[in-house]
Amino acid sequence: MRIRLFVGSLVAAAVCAGGVLAVNNSAPKAGPKTVKEVMKFAHKDGLLKKVLAGGATDDEKKQLLDLYIDMAEGEPKKGDKAEWKIAAAAAALSAGKVVLGREGAIAELTKTSDCKACHDKFK
Image 1: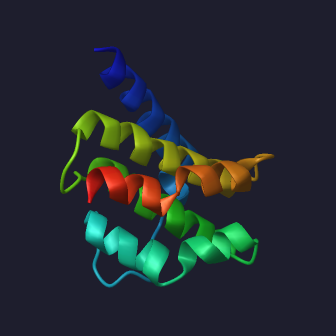
Image 2 (image 1 turned 90 degrees about the vertical axis):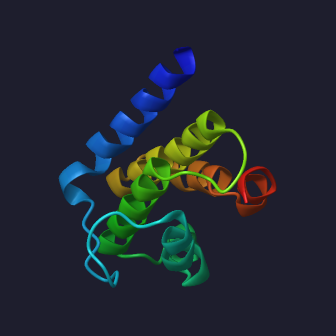
């Protein structure tokens, strides 16, 4: 029960932080993206790297937030779904903090978007 409340709080915070701002105009299809699509747009295409390097526009930061919200709403290929929700919601929350320009947000996003940590558990 506590994990569900915690995950719900993280997702709600991420949604509130991004809510209306989280618009993804450059993705090929409308609606929520699958985890595979999120990985392509956010990681393989270099969006995350651009945000972490400080070279992303406000719209690109919002796009990353939108993608991470979709990821938090998705499900992992393997592993514990509750752990997935916590990890994905943490990434979405830190992306929301980047959008808002919070101090330390880039460092937090770097930590919560660690590919190897998630791939070892959920892919």
